[in-house]
Length: 138
Image 1: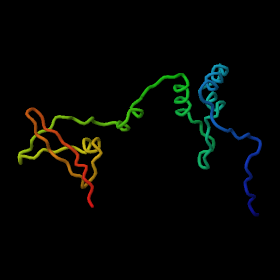
Image 2: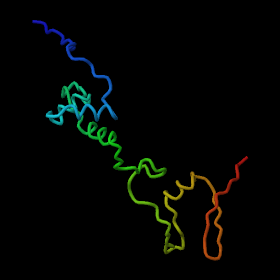
Image 3: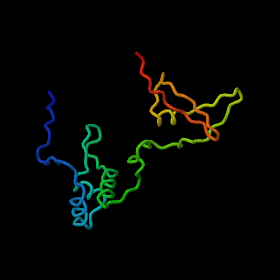
Image 4: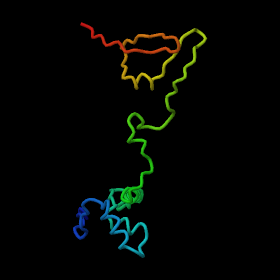
């Protein structure tokens, strides 16, 4: 007996975009007595996958709620040059046993240096300064 092809369900209305901002806060306040999943589903934080079916996106729902409240948990990605975590660049360098001083990639990135760029070392009485050579090759 031939198998019938499954037809997509038309009884469920397609949700446009999940609610955000003031709309989200008002909707959540009006949904007293419902569980977290039911509130997230009612606000449109649901995705459908072929393998798992309907899935409630609680993490995205929580993030949207926090943002709607105006709470900033982590503003690192808004600061230029600190899009990722990790160690910060130290401005203290050590002279190695062979007499060389190594400058880290964080410093060269901060200066906008690329492979092949040349710098000049300026030695003052109490400082050592790196100056970028602005010569273009002809």
